[in-house]
Image (tube, rainbow, N blue to C red; front, side, top):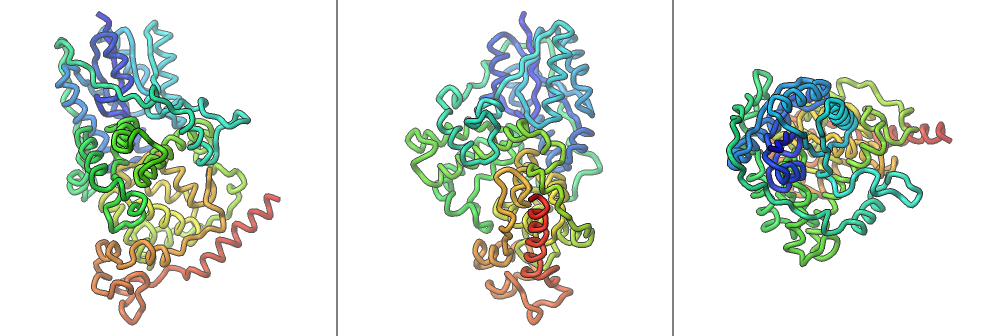
Length: 476
Protein backbone atom coordinates (compact mmCIF):
# COMPACT_ATOMS: atom_id res chain seq x y z
CA UNK A 1 0.00 0.00 0.00
CA UNK A 2 1.45 3.36 -1.08
CA UNK A 3 0.41 5.56 1.85
CA UNK A 4 1.15 9.28 1.66
CA UNK A 5 1.15 11.90 4.39
CA UNK A 6 -0.29 15.29 3.35
CA UNK A 7 0.84 18.27 5.39
CA UNK A 8 -1.75 21.07 5.52
CA UNK A 9 -0.70 24.60 6.45
CA UNK A 10 -2.32 27.62 4.75
CA UNK A 11 -4.25 25.44 2.29
CA UNK A 12 -7.18 24.34 4.44
CA UNK A 13 -9.43 22.80 1.78
CA UNK A 14 -10.09 19.49 0.03
CA UNK A 15 -11.16 20.99 -3.31
CA UNK A 16 -8.47 22.21 -5.70
CA UNK A 17 -5.63 21.30 -3.36
CA UNK A 18 -2.63 20.27 -5.44
CA UNK A 19 -0.73 18.35 -2.77
CA UNK A 20 -3.82 16.45 -1.67
CA UNK A 21 -4.88 15.69 -5.24
CA UNK A 22 -1.48 14.36 -6.30
CA UNK A 23 -1.02 12.31 -3.15
CA UNK A 24 -4.51 10.79 -3.39
CA UNK A 25 -3.92 9.83 -7.03
CA UNK A 26 -1.10 7.55 -5.85
CA UNK A 27 -2.90 5.78 -3.02
CA UNK A 28 -4.47 6.34 0.39
CA UNK A 29 -3.59 9.47 2.33
CA UNK A 30 -3.48 10.72 5.90
CA UNK A 31 -3.52 14.44 6.66
CA UNK A 32 -1.54 16.27 9.32
CA UNK A 33 -1.78 19.80 10.65
CA UNK A 34 1.02 21.23 12.77
CA UNK A 35 0.04 23.85 15.30
CA UNK A 36 2.97 26.23 15.75
CA UNK A 37 1.53 28.84 18.07
CA UNK A 38 4.84 30.05 19.48
CA UNK A 39 6.24 30.51 15.98
CA UNK A 40 3.01 32.12 14.79
CA UNK A 41 3.18 34.59 17.65
CA UNK A 42 6.83 35.32 16.86
CA UNK A 43 5.73 36.08 13.31
CA UNK A 44 3.25 38.59 14.70
CA UNK A 45 0.00 36.68 14.19
CA UNK A 46 -2.53 37.64 16.83
CA UNK A 47 -5.38 35.72 18.45
CA UNK A 48 -7.85 36.59 15.67
CA UNK A 49 -5.73 34.98 12.96
CA UNK A 50 -4.65 32.04 15.12
CA UNK A 51 -8.25 31.34 16.12
CA UNK A 52 -9.34 31.42 12.49
CA UNK A 53 -6.44 29.15 11.55
CA UNK A 54 -7.37 26.52 14.12
CA UNK A 55 -11.07 26.76 13.38
CA UNK A 56 -10.19 26.29 9.74
CA UNK A 57 -8.17 23.21 10.60
CA UNK A 58 -11.13 21.80 12.50
CA UNK A 59 -13.41 22.45 9.50
CA UNK A 60 -10.86 20.79 7.25
CA UNK A 61 -10.91 17.73 9.49
CA UNK A 62 -14.67 17.46 9.03
CA UNK A 63 -14.34 17.71 5.25
CA UNK A 64 -11.59 15.11 5.14
CA UNK A 65 -13.58 12.76 7.38
CA UNK A 66 -16.29 12.59 4.69
CA UNK A 67 -13.60 11.22 2.38
CA UNK A 68 -12.36 8.74 5.01
CA UNK A 69 -9.11 10.72 5.26
CA UNK A 70 -7.92 11.07 8.85
CA UNK A 71 -6.50 14.41 9.96
CA UNK A 72 -3.94 14.28 12.74
CA UNK A 73 -2.84 17.26 14.82
CA UNK A 74 0.63 17.76 16.22
CA UNK A 75 1.99 20.62 18.30
CA UNK A 76 5.42 21.81 17.18
CA UNK A 77 5.67 25.30 18.69
CA UNK A 78 8.56 26.20 16.34
CA UNK A 79 9.22 25.60 12.65
CA UNK A 80 12.49 23.91 13.56
CA UNK A 81 10.48 21.08 15.12
CA UNK A 82 8.66 20.28 11.87
CA UNK A 83 11.18 17.90 10.22
CA UNK A 84 11.46 15.53 13.17
CA UNK A 85 7.74 15.66 13.99
CA UNK A 86 6.71 14.88 10.42
CA UNK A 87 9.29 12.14 9.92
CA UNK A 88 8.33 10.45 13.18
CA UNK A 89 4.67 10.51 12.16
CA UNK A 90 5.44 9.21 8.67
CA UNK A 91 7.33 6.26 10.13
CA UNK A 92 4.59 5.51 12.64
CA UNK A 93 2.05 5.39 9.81
CA UNK A 94 4.30 3.55 7.39
CA UNK A 95 3.96 6.41 4.90
CA UNK A 96 6.26 6.31 1.90
CA UNK A 97 6.07 10.00 1.03
CA UNK A 98 5.12 13.45 2.29
CA UNK A 99 3.26 15.97 0.14
CA UNK A 100 2.72 19.67 0.81
CA UNK A 101 2.10 22.95 -1.01
CA UNK A 102 4.88 25.53 -1.17
CA UNK A 103 4.91 28.73 0.89
CA UNK A 104 7.24 31.55 -0.12
CA UNK A 105 8.09 33.87 2.80
CA UNK A 106 11.66 33.31 3.97
CA UNK A 107 11.09 31.41 7.22
CA UNK A 108 8.47 29.17 5.68
CA UNK A 109 10.71 28.43 2.71
CA UNK A 110 13.63 27.48 4.98
CA UNK A 111 11.32 25.29 7.08
CA UNK A 112 10.11 23.46 3.99
CA UNK A 113 13.61 22.97 2.61
CA UNK A 114 14.70 21.56 5.97
CA UNK A 115 11.79 19.10 5.87
CA UNK A 116 12.65 17.97 2.34
CA UNK A 117 16.31 17.46 3.21
CA UNK A 118 15.48 15.61 6.44
CA UNK A 119 13.13 13.23 4.66
CA UNK A 120 15.58 12.56 1.83
CA UNK A 121 18.44 11.86 4.24
CA UNK A 122 16.14 9.39 5.98
CA UNK A 123 15.27 7.56 2.78
CA UNK A 124 11.72 8.93 2.42
CA UNK A 125 10.34 11.18 -0.30
CA UNK A 126 9.04 14.68 0.26
CA UNK A 127 7.22 16.46 -2.56
CA UNK A 128 6.64 20.23 -2.59
CA UNK A 129 3.93 21.45 -4.99
CA UNK A 130 3.16 24.81 -6.57
CA UNK A 131 -0.35 25.69 -5.50
CA UNK A 132 -0.83 29.22 -4.11
CA UNK A 133 0.59 30.93 -7.20
CA UNK A 134 0.26 30.46 -10.96
CA UNK A 135 4.01 30.76 -11.44
CA UNK A 136 6.75 29.65 -9.09
CA UNK A 137 9.09 32.52 -8.19
CA UNK A 138 11.68 32.70 -10.94
CA UNK A 139 9.31 31.66 -13.72
CA UNK A 140 8.22 35.24 -14.40
CA UNK A 141 11.23 37.55 -14.84
CA UNK A 142 11.92 40.83 -16.58
CA UNK A 143 13.69 40.95 -19.92
CA UNK A 144 16.95 41.38 -17.98
CA UNK A 145 16.27 38.22 -15.98
CA UNK A 146 15.39 40.06 -12.77
CA UNK A 147 12.42 39.72 -10.46
CA UNK A 148 9.72 42.28 -11.09
CA UNK A 149 9.68 45.20 -8.68
CA UNK A 150 6.73 46.99 -10.30
CA UNK A 151 3.27 45.46 -10.42
CA UNK A 152 2.01 46.57 -13.83
CA UNK A 153 4.66 44.80 -15.95
CA UNK A 154 4.37 41.78 -13.67
CA UNK A 155 0.62 41.73 -14.23
CA UNK A 156 1.06 41.99 -17.98
CA UNK A 157 3.56 39.14 -18.01
CA UNK A 158 1.26 37.07 -15.79
CA UNK A 159 -1.68 37.62 -18.14
CA UNK A 160 0.41 36.85 -21.21
CA UNK A 161 1.89 33.64 -19.81
CA UNK A 162 -1.00 32.12 -17.87
CA UNK A 163 -2.77 29.28 -19.67
CA UNK A 164 -5.53 26.78 -19.07
CA UNK A 165 -3.25 24.28 -17.36
CA UNK A 166 -2.35 26.80 -14.66
CA UNK A 167 -5.98 27.73 -14.14
CA UNK A 168 -7.28 24.16 -13.89
CA UNK A 169 -9.32 23.47 -10.77
CA UNK A 170 -8.75 20.03 -9.27
CA UNK A 171 -11.61 17.99 -7.88
CA UNK A 172 -11.61 16.75 -4.32
CA UNK A 173 -10.24 13.21 -4.00
CA UNK A 174 -12.62 10.28 -4.19
CA UNK A 175 -13.73 8.73 -0.92
CA UNK A 176 -11.03 6.26 0.07
CA UNK A 177 -11.34 3.01 1.95
CA UNK A 178 -11.38 3.32 5.69
CA UNK A 179 -7.93 3.20 7.28
CA UNK A 180 -7.23 1.79 10.70
CA UNK A 181 -6.36 5.30 11.82
CA UNK A 182 -8.67 7.67 13.67
CA UNK A 183 -8.68 11.40 13.22
CA UNK A 184 -7.55 13.37 16.23
CA UNK A 185 -10.07 15.63 17.94
CA UNK A 186 -9.60 19.24 16.80
CA UNK A 187 -7.42 21.40 19.03
CA UNK A 188 -8.83 23.94 21.44
CA UNK A 189 -9.06 27.25 19.68
CA UNK A 190 -7.48 29.63 22.19
CA UNK A 191 -7.01 29.88 25.88
CA UNK A 192 -7.21 32.80 28.26
CA UNK A 193 -5.43 35.11 25.82
CA UNK A 194 -8.41 35.18 23.45
CA UNK A 195 -9.64 38.73 22.77
CA UNK A 196 -12.85 39.92 24.34
CA UNK A 197 -14.40 40.27 20.89
CA UNK A 198 -13.54 36.74 19.86
CA UNK A 199 -17.12 35.47 19.91
CA UNK A 200 -18.34 38.28 17.66
CA UNK A 201 -15.38 37.84 15.33
CA UNK A 202 -16.07 34.10 15.07
CA UNK A 203 -19.66 34.84 14.13
CA UNK A 204 -18.53 37.37 11.54
CA UNK A 205 -15.90 35.04 10.09
CA UNK A 206 -17.06 31.40 10.08
CA UNK A 207 -14.18 29.14 9.05
CA UNK A 208 -14.02 26.54 6.31
CA UNK A 209 -14.17 26.13 2.56
CA UNK A 210 -17.96 25.85 2.47
CA UNK A 211 -18.28 29.34 3.90
CA UNK A 212 -15.61 30.58 1.50
CA UNK A 213 -17.45 29.10 -1.49
CA UNK A 214 -20.72 30.66 -0.34
CA UNK A 215 -19.07 34.08 0.02
CA UNK A 216 -17.59 33.82 -3.45
CA UNK A 217 -20.98 32.93 -4.91
CA UNK A 218 -22.73 35.84 -3.13
CA UNK A 219 -20.05 38.28 -4.19
CA UNK A 220 -20.20 37.26 -7.84
CA UNK A 221 -23.98 37.30 -7.86
CA UNK A 222 -24.59 40.51 -5.92
CA UNK A 223 -21.56 42.83 -5.97
CA UNK A 224 -18.79 41.81 -8.33
CA UNK A 225 -20.00 43.72 -11.38
CA UNK A 226 -19.97 46.92 -9.32
CA UNK A 227 -16.64 46.14 -7.69
CA UNK A 228 -14.70 48.77 -9.66
CA UNK A 229 -17.16 51.50 -8.60
CA UNK A 230 -17.94 50.39 -5.03
CA UNK A 231 -14.70 48.94 -3.66
CA UNK A 232 -13.39 52.29 -2.40
CA UNK A 233 -16.44 53.16 -0.29
CA UNK A 234 -16.21 51.68 3.21
CA UNK A 235 -19.86 52.23 4.07
CA UNK A 236 -20.81 49.97 1.16
CA UNK A 237 -20.33 46.22 1.24
CA UNK A 238 -18.58 46.37 -2.10
CA UNK A 239 -15.64 44.02 -1.66
CA UNK A 240 -15.54 40.23 -1.66
CA UNK A 241 -14.42 39.91 1.99
CA UNK A 242 -12.63 36.75 0.89
CA UNK A 243 -9.16 37.82 2.02
CA UNK A 244 -9.15 35.72 5.24
CA UNK A 245 -10.19 32.65 3.25
CA UNK A 246 -7.59 33.24 0.54
CA UNK A 247 -4.90 33.87 3.15
CA UNK A 248 -5.40 30.45 4.73
CA UNK A 249 -6.36 28.64 1.56
CA UNK A 250 -9.97 27.89 2.45
CA UNK A 251 -10.52 28.85 -1.16
CA UNK A 252 -7.95 28.89 -3.95
CA UNK A 253 -7.11 31.67 -6.36
CA UNK A 254 -7.89 29.23 -9.19
CA UNK A 255 -11.42 28.70 -7.93
CA UNK A 256 -11.89 32.46 -7.94
CA UNK A 257 -10.44 32.85 -11.43
CA UNK A 258 -12.55 30.02 -12.84
CA UNK A 259 -15.67 31.54 -11.34
CA UNK A 260 -14.85 34.80 -13.12
CA UNK A 261 -14.21 32.99 -16.40
CA UNK A 262 -17.62 31.34 -16.13
CA UNK A 263 -19.57 34.59 -15.88
CA UNK A 264 -17.25 36.82 -17.93
CA UNK A 265 -17.48 34.89 -21.21
CA UNK A 266 -14.14 33.18 -20.72
CA UNK A 267 -12.15 36.37 -20.07
CA UNK A 268 -10.00 37.42 -17.11
CA UNK A 269 -8.40 40.67 -18.23
CA UNK A 270 -11.15 42.21 -20.32
CA UNK A 271 -14.91 42.23 -20.35
CA UNK A 272 -16.82 43.34 -17.27
CA UNK A 273 -14.90 46.14 -15.52
CA UNK A 274 -15.83 45.02 -12.03
CA UNK A 275 -14.72 41.45 -12.60
CA UNK A 276 -11.44 42.43 -14.24
CA UNK A 277 -10.68 44.87 -11.42
CA UNK A 278 -11.14 42.05 -8.91
CA UNK A 279 -8.91 39.71 -10.93
CA UNK A 280 -6.25 42.41 -10.77
CA UNK A 281 -6.42 42.30 -6.98
CA UNK A 282 -5.88 38.53 -7.04
CA UNK A 283 -2.80 39.03 -9.19
CA UNK A 284 -1.50 41.58 -6.66
CA UNK A 285 -1.53 38.79 -4.06
CA UNK A 286 0.72 36.68 -6.25
CA UNK A 287 3.02 39.61 -7.02
CA UNK A 288 3.79 40.05 -3.33
CA UNK A 289 4.52 36.32 -2.98
CA UNK A 290 7.14 36.68 -5.72
CA UNK A 291 8.59 39.71 -3.95
CA UNK A 292 9.00 37.71 -0.73
CA UNK A 293 11.05 35.09 -2.51
CA UNK A 294 12.92 37.30 -4.94
CA UNK A 295 13.80 39.98 -2.39
CA UNK A 296 14.11 38.18 0.96
CA UNK A 297 15.26 41.35 2.72
CA UNK A 298 11.58 42.33 3.05
CA UNK A 299 11.13 39.18 5.17
CA UNK A 300 13.92 40.43 7.43
CA UNK A 301 12.15 43.66 8.29
CA UNK A 302 14.05 45.77 5.77
CA UNK A 303 12.73 48.37 3.37
CA UNK A 304 12.67 47.33 -0.26
CA UNK A 305 14.04 50.74 -1.30
CA UNK A 306 17.40 50.53 0.45
CA UNK A 307 18.01 54.28 0.57
CA UNK A 308 14.86 54.80 2.65
CA UNK A 309 16.49 52.97 5.56
CA UNK A 310 18.12 56.31 6.29
CA UNK A 311 14.80 58.05 6.91
CA UNK A 312 14.65 59.62 10.36
CA UNK A 313 11.43 58.23 11.78
CA UNK A 314 10.02 59.88 14.89
CA UNK A 315 10.10 58.12 18.23
CA UNK A 316 6.64 59.19 19.35
CA UNK A 317 4.99 56.55 21.56
CA UNK A 318 2.06 58.79 22.50
CA UNK A 319 1.24 59.50 18.87
CA UNK A 320 1.58 55.81 18.04
CA UNK A 321 -0.78 54.93 20.89
CA UNK A 322 -3.31 57.50 19.67
CA UNK A 323 -3.20 55.94 16.20
CA UNK A 324 -3.59 52.40 17.57
CA UNK A 325 -6.49 53.40 19.81
CA UNK A 326 -8.37 55.44 17.22
CA UNK A 327 -8.04 58.88 18.81
CA UNK A 328 -6.01 60.89 16.31
CA UNK A 329 -8.76 63.49 15.83
CA UNK A 330 -9.17 62.50 12.20
CA UNK A 331 -12.54 60.68 12.11
CA UNK A 332 -11.90 58.48 9.07
CA UNK A 333 -8.62 57.27 10.57
CA UNK A 334 -10.12 56.65 13.99
CA UNK A 335 -13.20 54.90 12.59
CA UNK A 336 -10.99 52.61 10.52
CA UNK A 337 -8.83 51.69 13.49
CA UNK A 338 -11.91 50.89 15.56
CA UNK A 339 -13.21 48.71 12.74
CA UNK A 340 -9.91 46.82 12.80
CA UNK A 341 -9.74 46.24 16.53
CA UNK A 342 -13.43 45.31 16.74
CA UNK A 343 -13.84 43.06 13.71
CA UNK A 344 -10.32 41.86 12.88
CA UNK A 345 -10.63 43.37 9.40
CA UNK A 346 -10.33 46.76 7.73
CA UNK A 347 -11.61 48.03 4.39
CA UNK A 348 -8.81 48.15 1.82
CA UNK A 349 -9.13 51.86 0.98
CA UNK A 350 -8.86 52.62 4.68
CA UNK A 351 -5.79 50.42 5.05
CA UNK A 352 -4.05 52.80 2.67
CA UNK A 353 -5.39 55.89 4.45
CA UNK A 354 -4.35 54.85 7.96
CA UNK A 355 -0.99 53.46 6.82
CA UNK A 356 -0.12 56.69 5.05
CA UNK A 357 -1.31 58.67 8.07
CA UNK A 358 1.04 56.81 10.40
CA UNK A 359 4.05 56.85 8.09
CA UNK A 360 3.61 60.34 6.60
CA UNK A 361 1.49 62.47 8.95
CA UNK A 362 3.04 61.12 12.12
CA UNK A 363 6.34 60.13 10.47
CA UNK A 364 6.40 56.92 12.53
CA UNK A 365 8.22 53.88 11.18
CA UNK A 366 5.87 51.82 9.02
CA UNK A 367 7.08 48.64 10.75
CA UNK A 368 5.12 49.62 13.88
CA UNK A 369 1.95 49.79 11.83
CA UNK A 370 2.74 46.59 9.95
CA UNK A 371 3.10 44.77 13.29
CA UNK A 372 -0.12 46.25 14.70
CA UNK A 373 -2.04 45.12 11.65
CA UNK A 374 -0.65 41.59 11.88
CA UNK A 375 -1.59 41.48 15.55
CA UNK A 376 -5.23 42.26 14.81
CA UNK A 377 -6.03 41.21 11.25
CA UNK A 378 -7.86 37.94 10.75
CA UNK A 379 -6.54 38.00 7.17
CA UNK A 380 -3.00 38.86 8.24
CA UNK A 381 -0.86 37.70 5.33
CA UNK A 382 2.80 38.65 5.60
CA UNK A 383 3.42 39.27 1.91
CA UNK A 384 0.29 41.36 1.27
CA UNK A 385 0.55 43.24 4.56
CA UNK A 386 4.21 44.08 4.11
CA UNK A 387 3.68 45.09 0.50
CA UNK A 388 0.78 47.36 1.39
CA UNK A 389 2.60 49.07 4.23
CA UNK A 390 5.74 49.65 2.21
CA UNK A 391 3.61 51.05 -0.62
CA UNK A 392 2.00 53.57 1.72
CA UNK A 393 5.31 54.52 3.32
CA UNK A 394 7.03 54.95 -0.09
CA UNK A 395 9.70 52.44 0.87
CA UNK A 396 8.63 49.40 -1.13
CA UNK A 397 8.14 47.92 -4.57
CA UNK A 398 5.83 49.89 -6.81
CA UNK A 399 5.65 52.38 -3.95
CA UNK A 400 3.53 55.49 -3.85
CA UNK A 401 5.69 58.52 -4.73
CA UNK A 402 7.23 59.93 -1.58
CA UNK A 403 5.43 63.21 -2.15
CA UNK A 404 2.01 61.49 -2.26
CA UNK A 405 0.45 62.17 1.11
CA UNK A 406 -3.26 61.50 1.45
CA UNK A 407 -5.25 64.22 3.14
CA UNK A 408 -7.42 62.09 5.45
CA UNK A 409 -10.21 64.66 5.54
CA UNK A 410 -10.36 64.83 1.76
CA UNK A 411 -10.31 61.04 1.57
CA UNK A 412 -13.16 60.94 4.05
CA UNK A 413 -15.22 63.47 2.12
CA UNK A 414 -14.62 61.65 -1.13
CA UNK A 415 -15.21 58.06 -0.05
CA UNK A 416 -17.64 58.49 2.87
CA UNK A 417 -19.41 61.64 1.73
CA UNK A 418 -22.38 61.35 4.10
CA UNK A 419 -20.22 60.12 6.98
CA UNK A 420 -22.12 56.85 7.32
CA UNK A 421 -18.99 54.80 8.02
CA UNK A 422 -17.78 57.38 10.53
CA UNK A 423 -21.14 57.36 12.32
CA UNK A 424 -21.07 53.56 12.56
CA UNK A 425 -17.69 53.40 14.26
CA UNK A 426 -17.61 56.76 16.06
CA UNK A 427 -21.04 56.99 17.71
CA UNK A 428 -19.92 60.18 19.46
CA UNK A 429 -20.09 61.88 16.06
CA UNK A 430 -23.27 60.20 14.80
CA UNK A 431 -25.55 63.06 15.87
CA UNK A 432 -23.62 65.64 13.87
CA UNK A 433 -24.87 66.74 10.45
CA UNK A 434 -23.44 64.20 8.00
CA UNK A 435 -21.01 66.55 6.30
CA UNK A 436 -19.68 67.82 9.62
CA UNK A 437 -18.52 64.36 10.65
CA UNK A 438 -15.36 64.57 8.56
CA UNK A 439 -13.79 67.37 10.59
CA UNK A 440 -15.93 68.28 13.60
CA UNK A 441 -15.35 71.77 14.98
CA UNK A 442 -14.93 72.57 18.64
CA UNK A 443 -18.29 74.38 18.48
CA UNK A 444 -19.98 71.02 17.89
CA UNK A 445 -17.82 68.55 19.78
CA UNK A 446 -15.84 69.07 22.95
CA UNK A 447 -12.41 67.56 23.52
CA UNK A 448 -13.96 65.24 26.07
CA UNK A 449 -16.29 63.84 23.42
CA UNK A 450 -13.82 63.60 20.56
CA UNK A 451 -10.19 64.79 20.35
CA UNK A 452 -8.95 67.56 18.12
CA UNK A 453 -6.53 66.55 15.33
CA UNK A 454 -3.24 65.27 16.68
CA UNK A 455 -1.45 67.38 14.05
CA UNK A 456 -2.58 69.80 11.38
CA UNK A 457 -2.48 68.31 7.88
CA UNK A 458 -0.45 71.08 6.25
CA UNK A 459 2.18 70.94 8.98
CA UNK A 460 2.39 67.16 8.86
CA UNK A 461 2.67 67.12 5.09
CA UNK A 462 5.52 69.61 5.07
CA UNK A 463 7.37 67.67 7.78
CA UNK A 464 7.13 64.48 5.74
CA UNK A 465 8.20 66.25 2.55
CA UNK A 466 11.23 67.71 4.31
CA UNK A 467 12.19 64.29 5.68
CA UNK A 468 12.00 62.64 2.27
CA UNK A 469 13.71 65.56 0.50
CA UNK A 470 16.61 65.30 2.92
CA UNK A 471 16.77 61.58 2.24
CA UNK A 472 16.82 62.20 -1.51
CA UNK A 473 19.63 64.73 -1.21
CA UNK A 474 21.63 62.30 0.94
CA UNK A 475 21.08 59.57 -1.64
CA UNK A 476 22.42 61.79 -4.40
